[in-house]
Image (cartoon, rainbow, N blue to C red):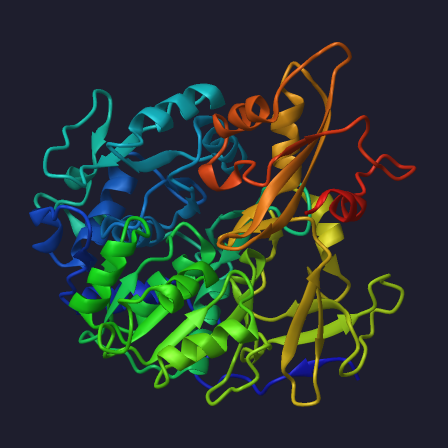
Length: 536
């Protein structure tokens, strides 16, 4: 009664490994444009498929890597990102994607949990990666990309361009992993799930290829090599990885990679590449709405905009469409644990408050928030959204306790989001059960910031929650209890945290000093009480 599912996507390819995308890549002499960064001639000359294959060969022959070894890719959006990713995949390895603005401490944790065997980075973050290896107690080879004309190779680093060179490479040396299946783990991104510290999300070839097909079937874009898409969403994030990089390359289009969102570069990309589709997050959509020099004239080819990673309100969608009346504005909903896409608004949608209908081959049900009835409830009844489908992860790596909490019987993935659906199968996300703070679409787990704060010698207890932020969606705010006899300012505490975390995790919501942190009888922090009492 409470389940809602669509007919299977007819062109879904169950049991497909990501080598299918590699094979498509090899068939085309694609040029992945480098934008807002000095071009490196060697990346343009060979076919990207050849460069990926060369990398795969050397991963096996030079570094002796084999399934189930892990390659950590810690890069901004560069043309080398898909080359490194697809090369590692073709070698039968697993890729763990690492945020390139992470601190050495954050990277060290991921290197440890993922058991990474090799790192791909840049000249600019080599020092941080080297320090992360020391903190993790690992001696790992680090291949670096010289993304600027004046970059020189750091001492101890490996030249990535030598690894992808098509000279003196024996492609016949590439060994297909024995007993390779579509259920093999291909990506290991990290997510906080519904609560707690980041955990390794085990995504298989079948998870990712299914989601690529689901997205393609829902959007019906019919892209080709003539289409160039500004790749502004970070590829280390599951949204940018699957929906932008892998899905669009698999359809034959080109990507104009942008290492970071910079307003002037973004506007130049819209004008130069005449992109027909944009994958965005709400802050970029709001930027387009509010900027006086972005309009139909500066983006004449734009026909589809897809916003995800965080909700955008109906009023803002209507404002966007007033400025771009010929554009189809679509919202999506997903999570790392679902590769990520679960919901997409269909063609002709005018229910702008909705995050869409189910993607193909996906099922969902709404269960009461107390979890007493797992059968699901009917339309317009609010509860926790649970989903299952071919894109849903097999579980968290080496974390059976988290798996038990995250899955209901029957392989139903708990999203931690409060939702309902209407009589036509449109879903509406109304709240979050989970404690995550969403800053510009990125996850900020309160437990991670609380652990950093508790390491401060003057802090006895700390709690973190999110408050609304006009541009970023949310901002972390800390409630702090100082040790007896200690003194500190809010600025001191914020600066301490800023030195130890990525910039989007900083305490932009401020620091408030209190006598005690409210907790329930079992010692769990009462975040709803904190929000009610200490939000502006």
